[in-house]
Image (cartoon, rainbow, N blue to C red; front, side, top):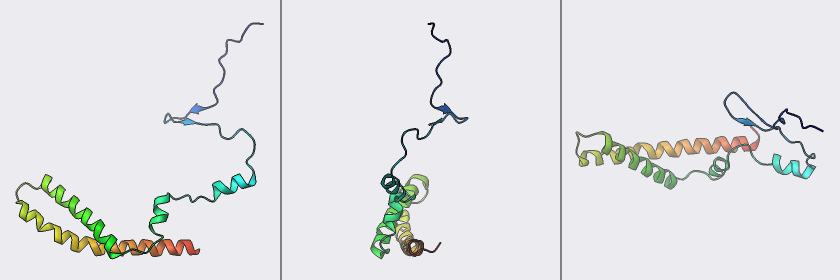
Length: 122
């Protein structure tokens, strides 16, 4: 018997963006315990849910503000050529004084929001 000249159809196809879309599940249906294990996972990324499990601290806010101040200092070194390094160092305590409470209160807002969401509110 002669072989067919038609090519076999592939099990996936590309969309307009060039991404490959798989056909989906074609095997056996998952058992109830297999369904439960996949649906119990949170749809959010794991880092965000763990971060707001603990209330914010001033120490953590200060550390994050120090990192932000270092970034501001590095950017000012690269971009601002007219002022001296001493003038740029004056900027560091100002950035720390503004960023530390701002980061703390933003984290406390996000913590309270996560706690309300976990308690059953929106």
